[in-house]
Amino acid sequence: MSPTFKSLETRNYRIYAQGAIVSNIGTWLQNTAQAWLMLELTGNGALLGLVIAMQLVPTLFLSPVAGLIADSYSKRRILAWMQLGMALPAATLGVLAIFGFVQTWHVLTLAFIFGIARAFEAPARQSFVSEMVDRKTLSNAVALNSASFNAGRLIGPALAGLMIAALGSGVAATGWVILLNALSYGFVLYALWAMDGSRLRPAPRTASGGHAIRDGLAYVWSRPDLVLLLTIVFFIGAFGMTFQITSALMATDVFGKGAGEFGMLGSFLAIGSLAGALLAARRQSPRLRYIVFAGLAFSAVQIVSGLMPTYWSYAAVLPLVGMSVLTAGTTASAVIQMTTVPHMRGRVGSIYLMVFMGAVPLGSPVIGWAGEYAGAREAIVLSGLLCAVGILLASALYAAIMKRITHRSWVELLSAGAASSASDAATGTRENALS
View 1 (cartoon, rainbow, N blue to C red):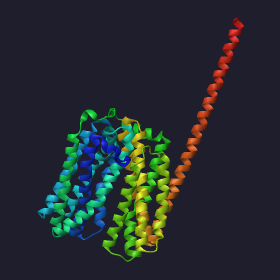
View 2 (tube, one colour; view 1 turned 30 degrees about the vertical axis):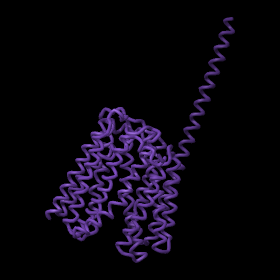
View 3 (tube, helix red, strand yellow; view 1 turned 135 degrees about the horizontal axis):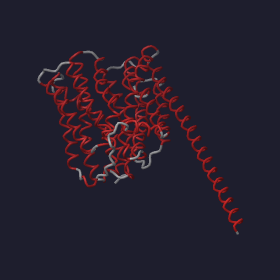
View 4 (cartoon, rainbow, N blue to C red; view 1 turned 120 degrees about the horizontal axis):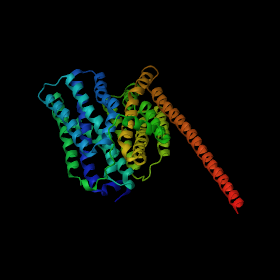
């Protein structure tokens, strides 16, 4: 089998991956249909952002607790329960829309409930990969998870658009599409049930004491490499993950295009993201320097994209943007899974999600303000510059810390050697005196 798909040789992961791709397509079906539903109900584009925020807020505040639960209980069982936790609000929203009872507050409330389930599902899902495959194929499995997500991102929106149009483009049409997402979680449930539990490699479980979350934070703080990784992810999330804002501004304000051309830009970006995930799948040993280089490459192509003179030249650069940002994110996730002690993976993974997801709403207003008052091109160039400066400063600080640690280690080693020599000399003197 090709090295790109090496982890699919493992039966448990192969079964899980099949369920996950269906669920990922379903997720993007709902994302697209839910956005169209809000426009049908309100005609207010600003409320789309509020729906996203309602799904995001639980991840920001519940991630530490969710990570602790992932480390303390069976990840397979948590995932099974959370599939139901995400399917129920999706099914409820779909039925309300089909029968014409749905209102704006229903969408917002159910998005929040869905977000709670997703907040508890994500750390368990991330750390469960290491229980399905061995260390040699772990990096490959993490990358294929990202590839699966981006494949769903390519297929889901287009399929949702076709289905909504075929069903009449109204509120009821969105309900049928959302209902498909609710059904898609059944594929993951079946995959979890069909696995061979004897072939899983469960990590040691953590007692859920009062200091467990603090221990997770202390563990991350004691690892300069993880601090650098999280800092890079923060800057990419804050100033790089603003594609919806910058692409919309470039398509409409700069190039004078419409909604269709704007949608095509998302597809170009997704093509690059999928390619980046598949390229990352070929690397067996992810390194911290890959994250640094990928982050800087992302900053560079982001700046270049803002300088492109035409719509098509801008679109041509977007796959490179998607490829570099996915390489950084996928490698960061793989490094966490491969270098974190097993009983800490859930908590470290939850901190990663909290930093990454929490950075997006912090940086987006800055880039949005720049785009509004300075211009779309200037906003994109600013986002690339801020991202590059943040990564370079974090890397310089990491290098200084590691140099200090190395120097201290050498001093301690030399001191120990000197003390040992002095002890040997003293012993020899005593032995000579006795003789």
